[in-house]
Length: 168
Length: 290
Image (cartoon, rainbow over all chains, first blue to last red; front, side, top):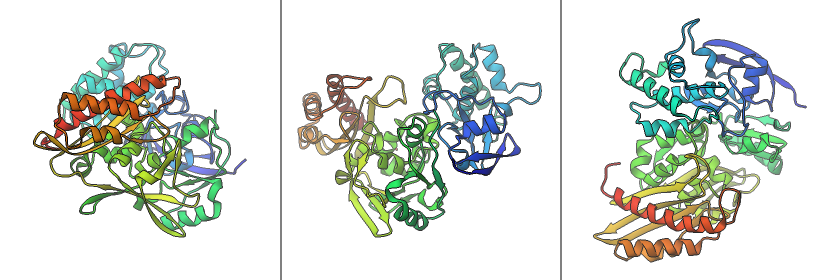
C-alpha cells in the first residue's frame, strides 16, 4: 500500500484538496474524496463515457487518469452546470427532448456535448451523432440526445456571446 | 476493478526520465496518455511496480517543420495533431489516421508516442507510420537510436524499444507534391477498435500511379505494409481493374486471426475492401486544398 498524497484540484471554480494513493483514479477521487458524486463510473476502461469530465477545457475520461496526474488542474463536472436553481441551457434541452431516462449516462453525455459543441464552429447532425458516440446510453436510443445537442449547437452558434470557450 | 499499487514517478525532463528508466528498467511502464495502459491496469492485465508518468515533460509535445519532414514529439496529444494545419497540409495521412482514433475525449489525452510505443495491432498510428516509412527516435542514457518503422513493430504490443529506452519523437516524411492521402476503417461503432483499416498515400502522373504507400491495421500481429497491393498499383493506370487487383492482393497478403469481433475470413475480406476504399479516397483527395 503506497502512501497518500495531498491532491489539490479546482473543480467548478472552487478549490478542493484531498488525499489519494498513487493508484486512485481521478473519478474515484472526485466521488469518494471530494464527494462530488455527479460524475459516474461505469466501465473503467474508457468505453462507456459515464465518467467524462472537462479537464483543462477538454473532455476526458476520469477513469483513465490517476488523481495524482490531475494535481493542480482545473476540472468541470456536472455539478458546475446549473446556476443555483436555474438549469444550464443544455440541461433544459435534455429535459425538453426526453434525452434521458435512468440518467446514469447523462453527466458524461453533457460533458461530451459541451466539449463537442464549444470546440467547433458548426456541427451537422451526422457530426453530432459521431461526436456523441463517445458516450453510451442504454435507455433512450439516442434520438432525444442528438436532438438536444443539435438544439444546443443551434443556440450556441446563433449567439456569439454564448458560443465562447469560456462556457466550457 | 481498480489498479494494483504502484509507485508513481513524475520526471520533469527527458534526462530525468531516462535516468529513472535506467534505474527501474523492466519494472517500469511509461505512462503517456494512458488511454490503453490505464484500462489494462484497471483490469490488472498490467501491474507495473513503477509507473513513470511523462505527462509533465512539456518539451515532448510539439509539431516541428524540419524541411523535408515533420518532427512530432512523442507526447503530442492526438487532439493537437487533429487540429494542426501543418500536419493536415504536410502529412495528410497522419491527419486522416487521427480522425479515426477513438472519440474526442480519448484524443484529448491520447498521444502519438503512446500509440506507437504500445503497438496495438488495431491502432491507426502504427499503420500510418509504417506506410510513410516514418523514423522513430528512441533515447536512453546510452544515447539515441533512430529506428525505421519497418524495424520498429515486431508483433502484438511488441516493439524494438529496449527496457531502458523511451520513444521521444516521430519523424514523418512530408507528403510529395500532388499526392493524396486517406485512412479508412470499419468498426461496429464509430471510434471503436477497427476490425480492419487501411491508410493510403498515392501520387499520380496523369492516369498512372507513380507513388503508392499502403498499410493496414487490425489484420495481423501488428501493422502490415501491403507490399503486394502496392505492386499491383505502381506504374499501372489507376482504374477499376487495377484497384480490384490491389484489393485482392491485400486480402491475399494479410494473415488475420479470429476474435470475438470478427472472423479471420471476414477480416481478410475487409482488408481488400478497405484497400479499395482507401485508394479511391486518397486519389480523390489529389489537388484538393488541405
